[in-house]
Image 1 (tube, rainbow, N blue to C red):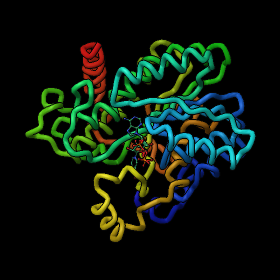
Image 2: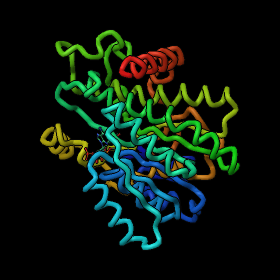
Image 3: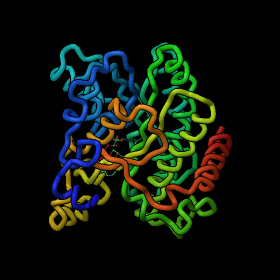
Length: 320
Ligand SMILES: NC(=O)c1ccc[n+]([C@@H]2O[C@H](COP(=O)([O-])OP(=O)(O)OC[C@H]3O[C@@H](n4cnc5c(N)ncnc54)[C@H](OP(=O)(O)O)[C@@H]3O)[C@@H](O)[C@H]2O)c1
């Protein structure tokens, strides 16, 4: 059914589908009371998400490592929506020091924080360690976002309880979470160059995005916090993400073009999950094409999610 809907663009139970755009799924939504941080908002899906949030009136913070690209996106948004509230702050997710500096800078602004979109990502990089000595795809896609979310959580909780508006966290995962190492997360071999697979390391990091969302959702429910956490697969979209596999993806697209989306369609699921009123109270779920779907068995493994949480906490602590 998922594949049929993907190809035909037919809407699912939510009323939206693979052909829906971010503007369509947020039509009529007033986001003017909301402040949102979008990581990796300087290109691709993140930039379109930022534009549409600004169009709906939200105060958008673009968190980016490439400041010049982020400033260009800011200018583009202001040209599209002259009244937009959009700021740019520096963030390199592959560096825990940079993540802390970003959080300190954001918190010093004393703004509310309603929505966090953990969108930034890298894909299929050749083997590389981050400045903290952690495999790059895991460090950027999962660990940086894990640490960032924890640093911003108190602010989100305070905002939600002061305003009475539900906070929302959205993790950008991928269908690629299905293609990971045996057992899902290779806790013991995370940094081993000899067994490194660029594809499986990406899948592992995207599985980690779902497990992180699920475990955080469970913890927030336990706390009684008015914040939901969900993960999404945005679809297949030709963006800068393909920089390490440009030729492969171009060839793949030739044969699979019916499965691909454009960027406005690619940003739709994120915007739907982050803004749509019909998802109030919905947490710990996985969405694609703006509809809830089941991720892999590993992604639904609660013990694995808890193990990843403890592992990530220890990794962060070990780099201090
Ligand atoms: N496109 C797809 O088909 C697809 C499919 C499934 C899932 N996704 C997910 O969707 C998300 C957005 O991807 P996209 O397709 O929009 O790709 P994109 O255009 O390359 O956007 C990714 C953004 O993340 C930023 N980023 C990368 N490393 C970073 C770091 N260390 N610190 C801060 N920012 C960093 C990039 O900045 P730079 O420009 O500086 O690198 C870029 O702005 C990713 O999480 C990806 O895994 C995409």
